[in-house]
Length: 202
Image (cartoon, rainbow, N blue to C red; front, side, top):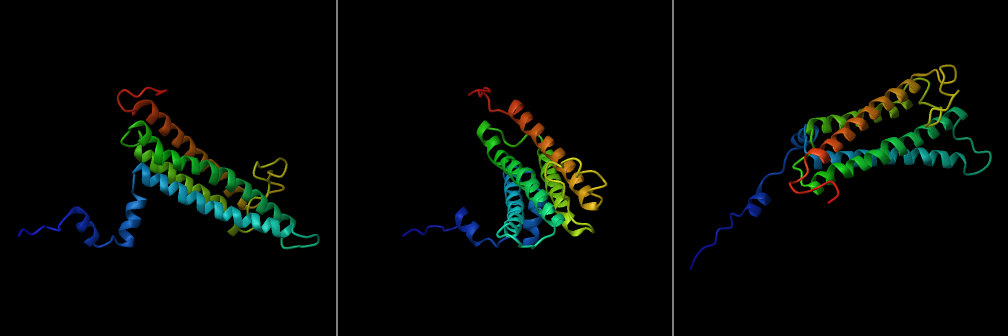
């Protein structure tokens, strides 16, 4: 009678101790793997989506019935401005970038994106740029209140004198650079790292 060894890779994986929280966080914060960065994009975008949803609930509560006064005029404009900004620029666009990060290299047979560290930089710039926009709510004077297009003349220093407006502008610059870097990376990957025999339209 023979004995079978149960020391298979699956068994070793099940018996291996789990990674500590610190090791997992370090791995996620220093990764250049396009699939992990894609997940980070999507999770972060969904968190911003939840923040924008709370702002939308505040606006709907204000408009639920005539005479309700949960927020001042300025407070309502702050909710409106940041809801639109977050939904369009911190949720919808980065969610696409997350899907593209996770799927595009696999579709074209590339081992990773063309510039993995630039890809990681793009994500972290998006995260901190988005946090700068949201941080306007905790500074004196409150968040930006000039609409998510920064409508004139409300975007002038006379009507928007607080630091929240400056944070909004700086956050848009940082996330805009992040989006540009990500686009350059995607284009370079598609142009230069396709699998042998894969043409642009195959």
